[in-house]
Image (tube, rainbow, N blue to C red):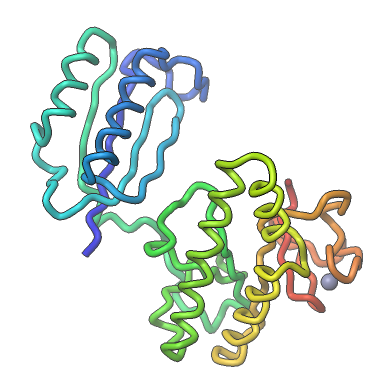
Amino acid sequence: MIVVGKIVVCNNDADTNTGDQNNVPEKVRNLFSSLKDDLLRFGIIREYIYYEEYNNLVLICEILDSWNPTIPNIDTRIDRLLADIKTTNFTISVSNISNTPLYETSPDWREEGSLILFPVRDIIPFPRVYPPLMGRKTRLYVPLPELQLPYNLLDDLQNFVNCCNTIHRLYINYHGFLEKKARYELSDPLSDLTRRGLDIADLIKEEVGLPVYYYLSYLPDNIPNDYCPLCKKNLFDNYDRGFYFCDICKFAIDYIR
Ligand SMILES: [Zn+2]
């Protein structure tokens, strides 16, 4: 059982409707960031996502069993942060969201018409928690066990998703050669990574009997987003709620890049 915790530093004064992200003072941001680094360094959290939401700082993290986020005075590091933060108008809350559904699931994947395979999650570093397949009709996640895929295909799919997310982190965190190489793998329709993804999508299609589109995480340079990057077909007629679909190459491409 994965324990997922949510730590929120909330600005009590802010108007949450403005969406203004400049209301978090640098001091609070730095305190929270150093708490996150401590938690990682001491092995208290593993995977994490850290973002600013309106005027709040949010850390969602996978927590080791030894640490129970439902107990308020859980850790001296959080106590220290609380003491430091008292001088501001911010409060900090810690909650266990393990039992909160992180996503909505498709009521019946057989009714979806087709599926979309998302290898990379820009803001979701929990590939083990979020299923990589989404139904085209409802745009809701498809729980993998419901597909009853053969074990080796499930294994290949999970390995592929982990690999894609590792490469995506290379692209985000590095500069120079590694960044360029990672970008190529994520965006080129003929890269090893893309071809592997298309193969896996095809194998899933054989099992479930529905077309499976592969979401290309980035587009190659100089390709407009309404053209297929492989067959170069104009996809204007195959637009569906935020995505262009190429029925020949089985790519799904974002409307907005
Ligand atoms: Zn195409």
